[in-house]
Image 1: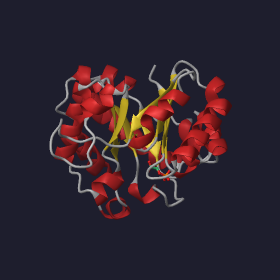
Image 2 (image 1 turned 120 degrees about the horizontal axis):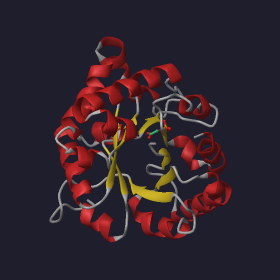
Image 3 (image 1 turned 180 degrees about the vertical axis):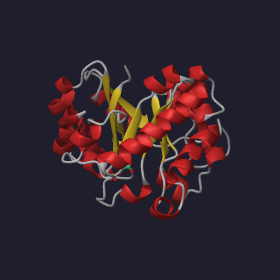
Image 4 (image 1 turned 90 degrees about the vertical axis):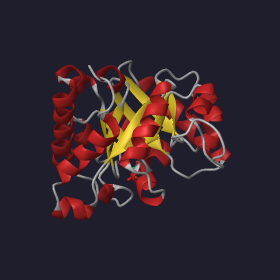
Length: 253
Ligand code: PGA
């Protein structure tokens, strides 16, 4: 059985006080809702990771993730955060390849492959984001495009390493737009990605890899999305900033 995961990507939002309040509210409302085959992963700005870790310490099956990490291990890279630094504070997950990183910070598939490597080498599980633009969906082989993102950034891994990776399919046209992919559209892609993993790593690894959907997930859209056979939870942006709505999404998984 693969893990069901609901992750909240806070992006560059919330002050420290607001972040603590949000976390406390979510933990209070949701901590009894998360069974052992499930996980809630909060992705605050890196500045707050250690603080948020304290506030989730008593909530079983809660974890934090960093939103990004450097592909370098140390040195003169002002403003960057490395895998050894995240490991040294006990962070177990990291978002890699979010479309905003690809778009605004020019992260390429090759660079993301390096980030995946440094994360895994430091016992940090990548939540690897992939997804096509609206133009690609309308004019191109959009499934082939997303499969290629996975091929170029993940398929150098061993099967053993691949077992630690979570995939998040996030169509760019659905991120922050209020336009959710339909459950059918998401399921089509998730099934194709799982088949792609099976071709490379075999059915067993493909079956145990959690593939999350992201892109305007809300309390209203989550139940149908999460009920789809190959959708193993969600990576939630805007709706993860509201404790009540995020809790409803956690309950839907
Ligand atoms: P959204 O963001 O839920 O606000 O669309 C999702 C994401 O970017 O991870």
